[in-house]
Length: 635
Image (cartoon, rainbow, N blue to C red; front, side):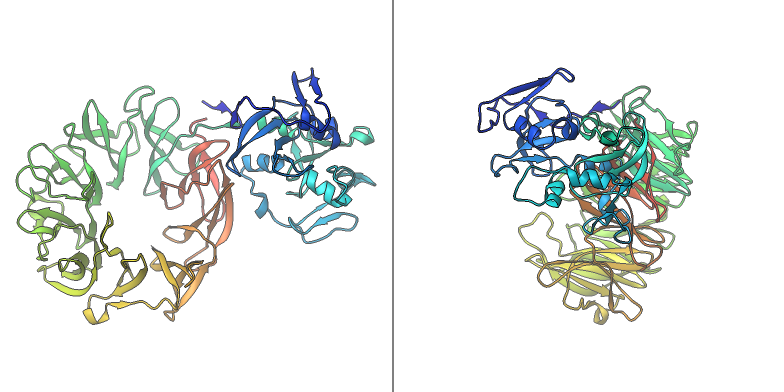
């Protein structure tokens, strides 16, 4: 279901702006609306019916998304008037960028359209946007019309008056179908759309598109809200709401025809809300809440192969699912043992408690002190290392191969109650953080075979913060584990270790400040800023172990197997950049224009959940060179 766009109208009882002479009201039976005061005066002085068309609304208070303020506004067929009493006439009445609005509705980012090579003979060249405006028939056409119409301001020359009225050209001329169904040569400007009608009389060969009327009729999509994108082999599993079945499990191969609902677990509009999708055994495990009980499910992507695995109690929500062999390890509370580690191979008989690590009803999962649990996993030695707590040993490292008798305590760290991180160094060693002294966090090399801890370094805890950990984001790249250290004043630094204390060192960032790190395709990328805290983009270590810049743009970077994707946030939407291989330059691939520039929340490899004006939040795909919506799931 879609709704008509209301343009944010908020009706208020306000005194309308008046011109210097006696107020005059002019009504138009063609649309049934009137205009008066300064709105009528501006309309008459700057082109009237030919340029602006008839009024389509009353004069009302409207919220402006760009300025985040309310202004008296009136919509006309070809323009939107916005009254700014703080400005001197004629600029007390500003025109909306309706030409650009309509382009953005179609996900056309005019600022990044290809520029023309340069001026064309006999045309008007606009260096700012890189487009020419030309005539189509001798002295008739877009250039002549642009030059002979303009804002009524005697302080400006002819060019300035036209620029104030129409703005810069945003596109080259191209054949397009307008709102009336006519296919005509069209060129878009910031505040207008020029159309060439060669069969009309000379004075009507150039007509202005009804951009005001069209923006008033724009339709926003509800969106299906794709969530928890999870790739299994070449199939993407995710949850979505098509407006008919509620939020349910879907699959896609990246094409519209093969993007489909898997199973309507709760028949009808009620949502099942599949969560915690985790790939295993050529399908996904996920969790639903049905009939006041949490259930573990498995799906191979077919309706018949989507089945319940095990039902837990109302308070026994399975959580922190992680792939292990042909199944998943997860935490659940069966009402007897507390929140403890379980394993499932996708059958009820193959779903069992691994071990009651903290005997009794107390949980072995480490609480963050609020309402969540901190459970860090690291695949190693054909099994899974993880962190858990018991009253005898405190927080320690455990390891399991998914079998009850294959779950054992690994570390012998000093008794710690805090949460900490793990990262695989090699087949037999883990790098872990844990409380060291009373006010410090240590970094350790843990031997998986015997649990021997080798101390590497320590860092003071960050006091008076919700998360006091001074070390985070352990990341293994090229046989080294990198991590970020945070000081009391919030400064970040980059460290690395190969598991030896004398080779656990601070990385020289050549005078830059660290903001974030990301690992992709066996490469570490660093988001840096200058010593003056000016953002400096993303960097990487080259073959000579020196810093090289990947991109100077301020991007939200995402890792894929063979490349990186970067999203740039703008007031008008998002721009996608990607490269063709590791450490190759990033290139612009496309834009998604929406009400707010919201970074993808759920991503996997080449799939993204993105929101645009026309469709709402839907599933999108990029192969690294193009960007497209997969399917309008909730039309």
